[in-house]
Image 1 (spheres, rainbow, N blue to C red):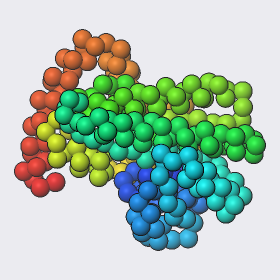
Image 2 (tube, one colour):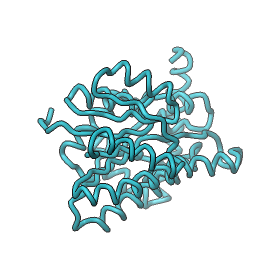
Image 3 (cartoon, rainbow, N blue to C red):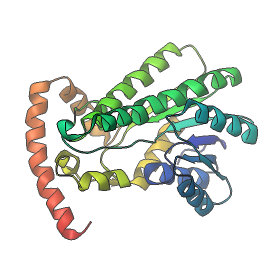
Length: 271
């Protein structure tokens, strides 16, 4: 574990999954954490389980007004903020033609515009305090158009582009930018995908725990890594596939067959 000074982290989507795991681990490492989520009761439960050092906060990341209030309260309580971890996301699984337009829109609003609103609200605050670190929990789907969750992949494509564009714009500032692309992770979102018959590719390779990803997020934060792939050795392959539609289609055909078999075994085991 990298030894670092105590920091204040603001983690979205922290009532469950990767966000909750990262919040718990952060406090164990000596940091203070704002456990933010639209599910305030869930955020309160996570913060109570973590104990001292965790502050629950209600936040709908699609609301500019709620971002403003939440960050105002963070600065008031802690005198500043060191790291904004944009982790919250949703998924609406199904073939694109069968997903309601409203659900496509909601996915883009939450998974792309939500983090954008948070980053742009925190940006002038970070610049005034002359420090700050944006950590974006993105996805391998930022490179791979993913059947069964087309809008999710589209939002993650857009989020990666925005994150890096903002980082380049602020390259001469004192701000840090880190983006992480987890593989399939055992979270409520993966459970939702498992209930669909259209997201087989998500199960083509073994999933990892939310606790494992939480550790990767905090390690990347400590190292101020620019971009982290999970697993690291797949990074080059994923980047190349994302720019080669012909190879991508072949990979998807093979991967969906493997994923289908793995998903059937998962269902049979009652996972």
